[in-house]
Length: 390
Image (cartoon, rainbow, N blue to C red; front, side, top):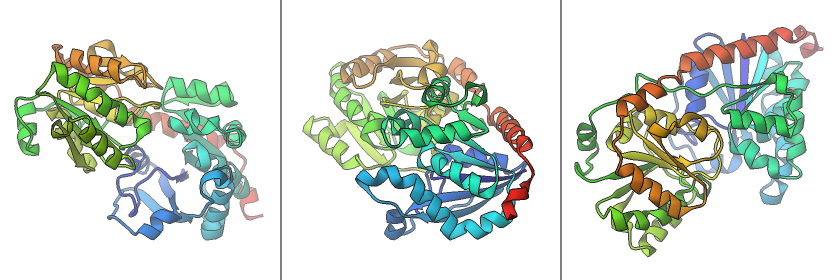
């Protein structure tokens, strides 16, 4: 097959660590089929300048500059996306004769892909991740556009059962919606010696470490974790909290930690390469992800693959993948309950081997097998490419 992927969730020189889950998935799909990834890069990111280099084997990468009105004009983003893609790459896309389009992220990517697929005479598949449905579809002006994209898709791939149900609620045909969990690279993410990992990272050897890894923004519950930490410190004075990642709320988080007088025990390590995460998971006593909404975050699967337990919020697909022996789940927006769960988990005996064994059920090989079958089914059900050059 010849597959065109349309998404904003993929590494670019302007954001080299964006969408690592998509990078892993599309790279593996590219081992079997011809995969072109066209990434929409916000015009403001382009103006800020490149931040690094990107190399993704087996995939042909390209990008378009995404011009769009800010703020209140977001309901026009799908239309702007279509215009930018067809203006900047329309001729090349028509000549390429793709078999199927895979749109990863509901809005504006999938909403735009529905129109682009029509213009190219190609069927399309929508992949949804979490807040693209749980948050974006709350908008009165964006929801009809997302519904249109879901209803026109040959298949809808949801990364959790909860998200699949949400897609059906919005308007997708239940017969075309399928849950396919993301995978874990078992060669990278596996159990290892905690003391050795801490030595490599320069971390204290005998203090409890709580790890947050991901984007530093309020919707990920980062501020809830900062609020919870002083409550935890009253019971575990030696506890340390490490934030690995960066994001728009990093300054606010540091300021709040200082105002709560817990800054000496809270460390902001900045963003690290995906390949560096296994040591962080091995070094930590637990991973904390107190998100307000989610699909199935890969950081949870990867931490468990390293034998590390999880304290997270019971949102999205997280309850589907974190069994009781692997962690504790609490409601979102409750720092007091989060602090109690952190203290409880730090006091538990954890069977790291059982946690890691559970995580082995999330395999990229299985994910790609099912994605490949989905794309082939949708491509095979479409008429020939007669309309593409008409």
